[in-house]
Length: 315
Image (cartoon, rainbow, N blue to C red):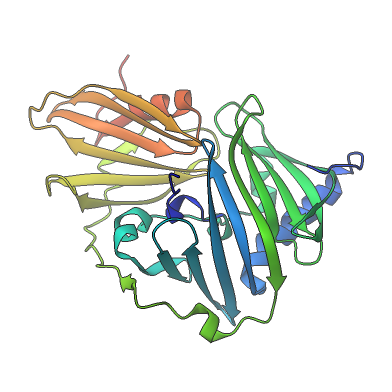
């Protein structure tokens, strides 16, 4: 059985009629604060592309700090430890994969701002992991992002089940607890095992947000971060930019081709798309690669919109 990597993880039964929009907004407010205030532990399954994996999680809130430990239960043992949203250690074969992980629990959003790009609607009641839950639809207001169906625990407002849906309502990704318990977590529960090795921190160069820019991103997406990293293949510098709208996040990589002959590519695995486009600049050709949980057409448009310095957009 193919095992789904941990880094892509972290992040029915309807019976009642739709509720008022104000109820949905109130639940979004609770959700936005839930992960920061409550400790929990549980076991969940993750599905995408027809493949499943199971995981255990311990989530400990200590004052202003958050510690989270994840274990992969299928295939080779794998472990990841996060402190305040930053990865502290990972199993050896996971280290390169989890460096930029962004699980659901680490999403930072303000519901009032998010409502400009998504609509919220309570669509019913459900029961997940033996706990009463409320089902909430988060629907995009345009074609440039995906929607969610969240089943929130009535007691804690934490997501016990999350479905990521494409523009046609087809399932792209499922996250669902099979066992969940709030509270009663200790510091011993979040101690890493011997195979969880500290990551080597890559020294970051000066921000490059003024060197490369996008002439177009979907409305609501903001530049979150940017820097230069060495390519794992050639050690040549690669410009990295990260954009997000509070729920969706997209990474853009720009690398000089130095005369190399490469083809444009596009692919999709579950919710994650990867689009690479060759772009000509005054300083030579570069390869722009866009990776994120957005529709393919949106990723292609973002790739073609990248510009260097003061380079004007094509007429």
